[in-house]
Length: 170
Figure (tube, helix red, strand yellow):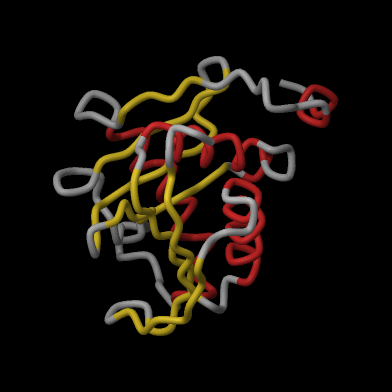
């Protein structure tokens, strides 16, 4: 896919949303390595002796998730859990070549539309680009009607959290 095509991406982005299962879990694990490397300046993580990062979230019970494809190319993933009686975005990633073209927004909106109810999305406060992305997407999705607070996470320390409700009327 060429850059010209990406620059013209709209809400009609052609992506496939595929559940992460045993048969494709390796695709998630491979993309998650890039995700962990990208966040390593914020998390302070280093790869293990084998050159791979230890993943914080394995996409198996109680977590579940989706891979997103454009044509047959994996372009991102979302891993969800259920925390504090809300759907929780545990991990979210878009490959760098597909950013800033509305694809992350498209991915998030498809997941929000699939699961109606209470949601929360959390970001490490040092990941200001992630905080800005989620504020923008959730703010648009909820017409600004969401709550945001700073909470202390036992693993990550201070995290920004947005909470909102997804419903079929949106």
